[in-house]
Length: 434
Image (cartoon, rainbow, N blue to C red):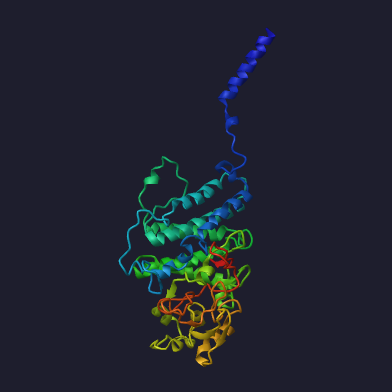
């Protein structure tokens, strides 16, 4: 009887355990899940690294190096030489896209997952506020990019389950989206850790920089489209900009080093940057500029729009390219290659002056305003082969097909001779300012 009683107890225990099946909710120990990832401060810190991928930088990939200039290609500032790459707006080739990578709610959902996980975490209130601020920054940045392109867009501020009607909701009016972005950024500004999570992370200054940029954009958009509340956004820009400028009172001394340095850490004026390192993360931008693949050039309109050294507009006729570049804002020389001419030896690497003082005028100038491995003349390709002159035309290149252009204004902003450009697989490691 005793033996039978023990069997009954065991059976009852088994039945109870089947009814209470919490023990079956075992989560994978070798991968993150929503239930396990949002627990500690370090969990949120690790998760946030993936959010930084929203910043493009100089990312390498098919067509991505060209994307650095995409906005200028579609304006009157630049053109891309090969046939078929004409300005799509000027040639009436714009088509409505059925799908667009810019309409990216997968990223919004990724941020919302983090934001929704904060309340149930083990963090104290200050740390919760910090990570909520980081999440609001990234979500605001992405919404800003989307709103600037599409105007009215659906506003989603939580993770939507599969059966949520909001998945099929209408677009939220631009006014409401812009106001939500501003409110989220102001909350983040007030609650984020001023120093962020260490060097080169989202901190209070980064949030303020986005407030300044977003509010200047939205305020001027509203002003010139006769929309309400333009002043509200412009005043927010006025509020944060002086504080940000006080925190970063100086900038890097040489303009071209902002875009061509191997390490932007702790450089004056650099608030956030994308760091590249050998065998970890590289790009191919410098390599592209120093090859025959560089179909990047400025228009004459863009060159003429640079001011003169005395701050006055350029009023020359542009018939003499040396005169056109003479006494101009130095940023022109560091963006569009100035004119020069040298004699190149048969080995293609040695060169000598022509004897004409005008031909070396900008060679001497660049030696004074740019570092030795930055924007020096004469230019060379990634093999060290010297280009004998600029302007250097693609259709009349004297056997030197590199560093050439169609119209004479070769853009060399990302030119340098110190980063690795040895192959086309993306090995360059210069940092990208964000």
